[in-house]
Amino acid sequence: MWNRQHIKTEGKGLSMGYEPAENVRHGGRASSAGNAVTKTLNVLEAAVAGQGPRRLADISVESGVPKASVHRILATLAELGFITSEGGGSYRAGPRMLALAEEVKAASATGIGDVLTRLSRDVRQTVHFALHSGDHAVYVHKVEADQPYRMASRVGMRLPLHCTAIGKCILAHLPEHELLSIVASAGMPAKTSETITDLKRLSAELAQIREQGYSIDNEENEKTIRCIGAPVFDRTGTVVGGVSISTVAFLLPREELLTFAPVLQTAVASLTSLL
Image 1 (cartoon, one colour):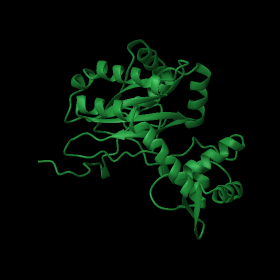
Image 2 (image 1 turned 90 degrees about the vertical axis):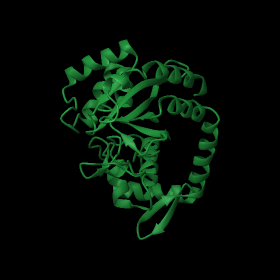
Image 3 (image 1 turned 60 degrees about the vertical axis):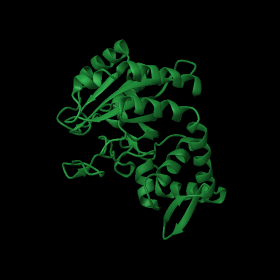
Image 4 (image 1 turned 135 degrees about the horizontal axis):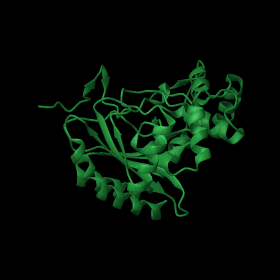
């Protein structure tokens, strides 16, 4: 019998192969984190990632913005109510940020949430929706399956693009120069023995993804985790993210996972009108 708790794999909770935000770096970005708006958004995202207060030093590393600039940005965000200072150089989400999150949650609950919940119910697996953000993607919605285990992924968590189902769907539909820029910035680090670390091989797989309309993460980001993903486009036809169905490899064969492709593609097609 499975206990209703995280499955332990290699000493870690079942994490969908995606590292928590505090462990993921922005491809070595330092002071070149972008223009003022980009830097501010990177700092805000890093400040509210994870659970509990975040230290200024950690926010600086996570966002790729120098400490002095981070301090100035946080001071402004605190004045506006998006960030709250906890003292001792620690910060957490402020009241305006929490209110905004609730508004987004309420808006998605009647549209996007319905689509994802229906998909999860149909396949009886955990479903994720992530949006493209720079050289990674970020979970914006998660529907946990009614299974005797729980995925350790969470809304707000970042995931790499080269070795995840959602990430590869995004890369497959980006212009070549954007793909090359992301690879140059984030690299293609090996997460498992199955991770694709060669750009030529990745490019060949991306071409296949474009042709078939879905991608597979075959334990490429973490052993025991296998996912199928499909790209999500906005009304202009631009890829903005992806949806994945996530499974435990030793509980669901790859062949059975592939049978989810049609229902997954139907679900993502219906998201376009909601974006």
